Length: 252
Length: 275
Image 1: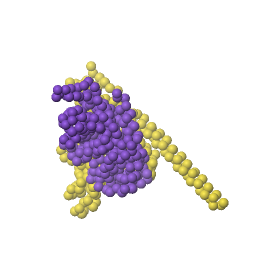
Image 2: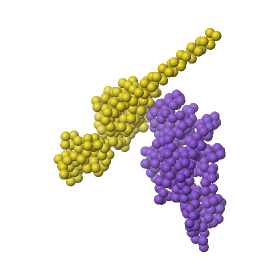
Image 3: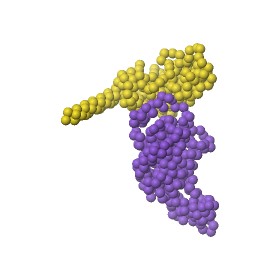
């Protein structure tokens, strides 16, 4: 009984029969006796004759080349130990962050509690992950705020060719760095807009399995921004009325 | 609830939280004197425990199970039953918790919740005596953390009180030196329920029901047990080595008084359906 037993982007559960016959199992699936089953909770997809399941949840498993945002936990000799979330603690050597010559005490460059943008340079399940900060945009972060989301939702937050994240940045006038490990750095012109960024990310996290999400997030942001503008105008009007009343008093 | 000031929280987070507080805001948009959403569910382990309850306080979740056994009373209180609160910080609740025998923070949680129950005379232990000097009821309330997102103490206190109210056990009497059931079901004799409220001091700000990230940047916290007559029956300063002035303590106590009736109402509503 060959065939495909799921709809496009259907949510499937572990053990669910996905396909039988001439299909290849890929990420998130396993095969038994010619049948392919899902190994995870996620969205089932068919690419050509490959069946894969994209997980809806999960911790961060590092991959070489990933951009990550981490917090320095420990300074140990010429290395920093960095928390990037997930089951693996990362480490970065001073040679991959600083220009030589550098001081013996590397904590004067980066210390515990500092937040960095770095790239995963090496990782296999035996050693690492190792990070590097030599590269464009890799740096220590100051100010702004860090939003935490599930790493599985990051691709949706970025969107196809950056469509989702760029839409959010344009609407709210933000600077952002999106880490593959589920951490997003946001610098907004004011607190209200940074809260709206958090709202947008939460909305995407909750509805990541639906379609036309970019349009709906866009609509939500525009609506909320309009409310903010009208509140600002109200406040300005109130201030002007107060000033008029004050000057009236003075004349009397 | 424990002292997490040495857990590495990034400077960015620390600075962000403090900036928001200076602007009169909190990271999750609450007012300084506002609790997160509270849900109390009773009887989740009805089959195994004489009483049980889960309390959810925002993202924090604690389950309390009450077992009633019989045993000998303490020699200095021969006509009183025994109540005991224990707590376990299970690793499922947080990556900061390890498995193994209870460490300082678990013991502290148990002791602080126990103080709330004990000092207000919540359980009338004189009514838990079967035969003076020989047999009394032993009421054990065991707390297990399920999810830690800040303020375990208040969640644990709500769960413990609800579980005690939910508890039903068979009444026993002595017949020919043996304990036999009388056929009646008893409740735990509860008098004056004290609710615990915890406020965090961050800089010069007092915020009630701290979120986990607020706990990580706090100078210290104040836990207050308030009974039905609005008496403060127990106070504990913990969660950090920073000082707190009398004026700030009074500010925290005012916040506690404003909120305690709402919390107690939630516990009573959740447990009112049981006969």
